[in-house]
Image (cartoon, rainbow, N blue to C red):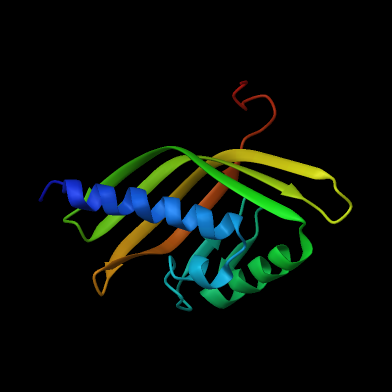
Length: 141
């Protein structure tokens, strides 16, 4: 097995920065470009919801982006495992801050896992899983 290249590591670091920026600006078109928009795409949400196919996930995102006053996604301590510069798994922490139309803030934190594949020379997330940390196990800052 070929070791991961420095180029792939940099590409994925840039990829996740761009993905996070698109989410935080609620730019669904740019956010979508980071994903495999196929019916086989899988999203496992921290609430326990499972979206089978990009369309299901995009409907939920569209509703959240329209309804919420603001969203901010942070990804922390990402650990990249890249295989033959074609497939990657990324594990890390996440924090999501949302403000609803009434001005109430909702914060969630947890762990996340992304599965990526290089398709037509660009990385795409083919599956993702967010899990929420319980109050007891949440790191204190």
